[in-house]
Length: 103
Image 1 (cartoon, rainbow, N blue to C red):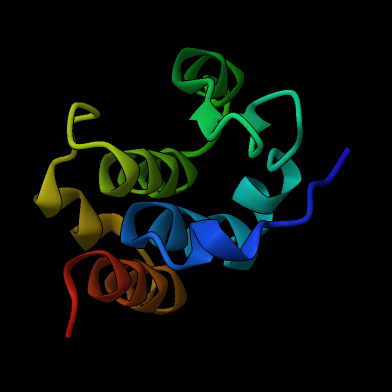
Image 2 (cartoon, rainbow, N blue to C red):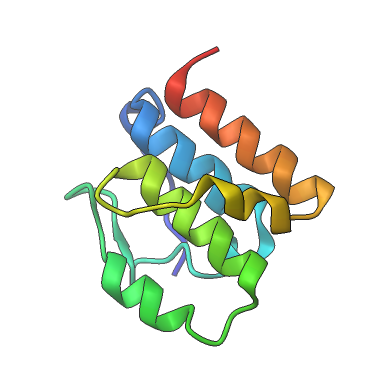
C-alpha cells in the first residue's frame, strides 16, 4: 500500500532526499510501501529493502543504495558507482544529493 508523505518529513533533508529518489525512480517507487516504510514512526526497513533488491539490476541497486545512504550515512555508498548510471538516473542522483547537502 502506498503511503502519503507527511509534510514535516519533506522539511527534513534526510527524508526529502530519500523521498525524491523513491518518487522519481520507477523501481524504487514500486517498493515505497508500508512493508518497508513506517512514516508515522519515521522508520525504514533497510535490510528488508536490500533483500528485496537482490535480483535487481546493478543500476537499480545503485539508486537504492544512494537513497539509503542519503537517509543514513551508516548505509555505505561508493560515489564511483554513479559512473554506471544513465543520464536520467545520474541527474536524479545529483538532485537528491543537492536536496540532502544543500545547494
